[in-house]
Image 1 (cartoon, helix red, strand yellow):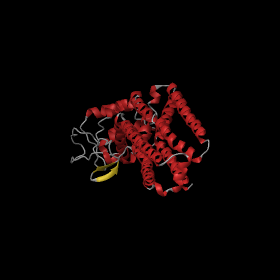
Image 2 (cartoon, helix red, strand yellow):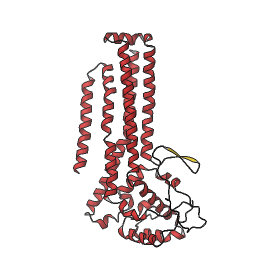
Image 3 (tube, helix red, strand yellow):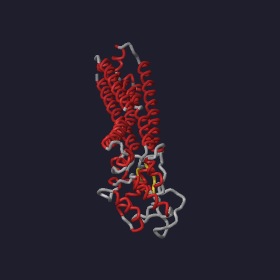
Image 4 (spheres, helix red, strand yellow):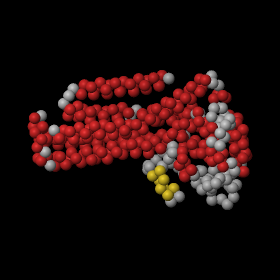
Length: 355
């Protein structure tokens, strides 16, 4: 009886940790749909007038909301290169303004300091899933211990004998558990890779770093950047010291900014921390807010969310074991719940596709 109680506690904890690991994926899908619906409603309210839509604040755009959600915005400044020139206006080296993303690790070294990678959703999923893997290792170790000292667990032996099983049955169970954990590790690795594709195969990083450059120039308002900041302020309604509250996507703003940029592409703008700010990707600012750029994100989110079905499959095994241990008719309830979840998610996906 004691062994059954311990097993049931382990299974319930396993179920909770699997669900916990699912949360970042569900949240990512929810945020993507939410911001997409907000943008759709804005278009509807403005009768799809592109000129009026472009005059909306940056904070109302899908691209801004998703980029600021999947990146650690407060940590973006640490990824800028430092300007080694002696003056504010120097010839720009043929390099980027900022570091490339490192998709392979969650902690990186910048300027001899260890900092968290700015891939916030990647780190979020990693942190929410780590307790599950630690638990699985502990659980597997405990089952190996029971197998090694099987003869000392008299009550377990009695239960197995009542079910016409023996130590060999328990050994097969260990093999199955090992395969289950191995499959979970493979699944986890594939999903992590898919999450990195959200960063690598979309334009979100270039976009959010360009917005960060504008934000620094607006907040510090240095003399050599007044041509840029004056244009942004001229077309913005309020709170002009924050890029999120500007109308930088407006065609009039873009046109004037590009004119200033094209007059002199060698400027490295002065700032308090000596970051290398050249607005190098400003020529792509209209593209960043295009349907093509936004669809890249939506498609990647859809690819990631499809893994929720795999999670449901992994939930079946512990739920089935729990139903057997509890010796009730819970297995029927189990399949009803699983079918209901699959049906609900399928209807939700079909509805979004039709939308």
